[in-house]
Structures are given as structure tokens and as C-alpha cells.
Image (cartoon, rainbow, N blue to C red; front, side, top):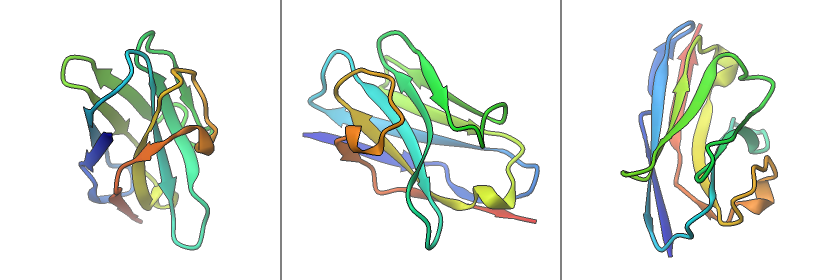
Length: 124
């Protein structure tokens, strides 16, 4: 069983920054992919960023390119999402997710395990 715990959400003014963390525990494969998704009220959950654990390849949604950075700490099994120049439209509940395939994918159904989410609110 895989467990994911997010932290680092909060309230920030537009233009500010936050760093989210996702700690992975439990039985995992040697290669896998970690993703960040977000869901705003009354909207579908959407892809934000992903990183492969073995090679460190990354992918980003167009809406966050140039502002968000996904990274990882292999030894601690922590995935980070550094969010810069935050805007009110970034307000959402942010979830990390685990895909055992190791492929770099933005497809939400590829991710088998999910954290409970951390709320990010950006005021204008």
C-alpha cells in the first residue's frame, strides 16, 4: 500500500510563492511517476506537473509553465512543487499522486494513489 501526504498549502497574495511537499511511504516500485493535480470549486481535477522518479523528466500544464517547478528528493521520497508568481486562478485544492508505471503522463487515470490534498488560496 502506498501513502501520500501533502503539506505546504496556505493563503498568499497574488504574486507570492508557496512550496508544496508530498511525502511518499509504503511499498513502491523502483521506477514510478509523481504528479501534482489541482481542483477548484465546481471544476474538474486538472493536471499541474509530473516528474519521473528514475530519470527526473518533467511535464507541466501550459497554465503553470515558467511559474511552477516540480522537483524531488530521492533519499527522502519527497516531491516538491515550487509555485511562484501565484495568481487568483491558481486557487484550488492541490493533490499529489503516484503512478507505478514510471511513464511521464498527464493522464489522471494513470495515477493509482492520491493524497488528501492541501488548500492553496491566492488573494488578489
